[in-house]
Length: 179
Length: 94
Image: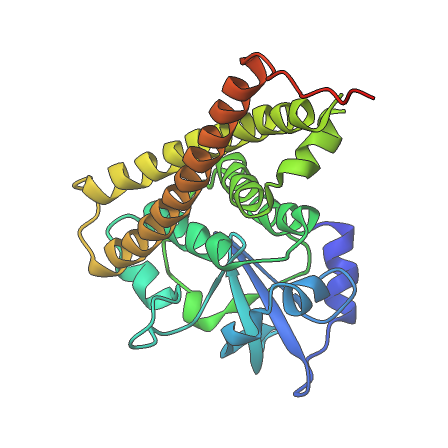
C-alpha cells in the first residue's frame, strides 16, 4: 500500500447524504466521493446519476451501505438489468460469454449517447480504464468475480472523435481552419 | 478569390473531411459487425447492445453519405460552371 493510500484511508468516512464512485478495475477496487472537484464532471457533464445503486462496501473491517456509481474500467454499470432497456449492467456483464466484447459494446453505446461533452473530459473518463485514484476498498457484490479485461483506450477515443466530427463538420468552419 | 472559387475551396476541404469521417466510422462499424458475427458471443445482452450501436453508427454513416453526395453534386456543378466560357455581356453604348 502506498503512502497516498494510507493517507486516504485515514481520512475516508462514509455519509448517507453523499454519492460515491466505485472504480472497479479488477482486481483493484477503489472508492471516492462523486461530487468532489476531480470527479464532479461525471455527474454534471456525463449525468451518471442514472447509474446510482446501493452497494455494500467493507472498510476498516466494517460494512457500510452506500449510494454509489460503479465504474468498470470507466464504464458505468447498473447493478441489475433494467427490463426494456439496454443500459449496461453488472448482471449482463457477468452472464456475457465474452466480458471484453460486452465492455466494448457498452462503451460504444455510452459514447454514442453522449453529446456536448468536451473531448478532454472524454479523455479523462477513458483514462479511468488505466489508472484510478481513491481509497482501496472491498465491495461485497464484487467479491470472487473474475472480470479482468484489457481495454483499448485509443480505439474508443478515435471513435468518439469521429462521432463528434460527424456531428459538427461545418463547411465554412473547415475553410477557416484551412486558411 | 471570388465567391465561386471560395466555395469550391471550402467544398474540397468539406468533402475530404466527410470522406475521412465516413471511412473511420466504417472501420468501427465493420469491427463491431465482426464481433456480432463471432462465435464468441453467445449471450443476448451483448448481441442486443452491439446491434443497437451498429444501427446507430450505420445511421450516422448513411446521413453523412447523403450530405457527401449532395455536396459533391454542388462541387461538380461549380467546377463545370467555372470552366465554361463566360457569356458575352451586352455593352451599353452612349
